[in-house]
Amino acid sequence: MRTPLAIKGIGDRLVISLPQGEWTTILPDLMHAIDERGDFFKGAKVALQVDDRELGPAQLVALRQALAQREITLWALLATDESTCAAASKLGIDIDVGSPSHQTEEDDYVFDSDLPGDEAILVERTLRSGQRLRHPGHVIVFGDVNPGSEIVAGGHILIWGRLRGTVHAGAAGDESATVCALDMMPTQLRIASHIAVSPKRRGRPHPEVAFVRDGQLIAETWENSERS
Image (cartoon, rainbow, N blue to C red):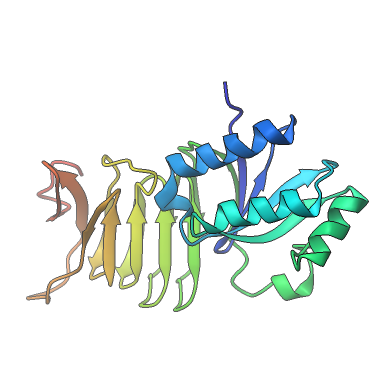
């Protein structure tokens, strides 16, 4: 039985803590977990916490290539073994995610979770253009999601405000996920593998919920929806 991956999110980046075990077993298990949730990890910047595990340049190159094939960037390596740190540095892989170059105003979305996760995070601010948020569970935003911002969630997404950016609920393939917003006009809305863009609005905005029914992504007003 595979050990669940412990994931911590910092803004649009993910830190994955690997379980103990032989690297020849851990690496295939990691790739299998990523492949099972490809849409969630696609485009992510990932740091791996390997602790005192000794990894050489060839192993790190293979790791980086395996992630790159899945459109994932190996952002950093969290290691305590000196030889592993030296190998990572020679390959240009960061070994310190806490350095000032990695800390920005946007990096205040921090959560811990195991995959798969049903936990929810609450963001009490507006997401501005260029800000991205990933979470294995549900995401609740008390604020607006502006054009150019993005939310990727393994579960539901609830926006207590205006939705103008890009959102992807059920990113691990969960078609039962929903997206709710007080004013829904997203740049793009995805649930699992289903994609939609907002039509031109007619009339006043009203709260809506988007969900998948019979293989189609549809949106209804909260008061009329069977899902509300």
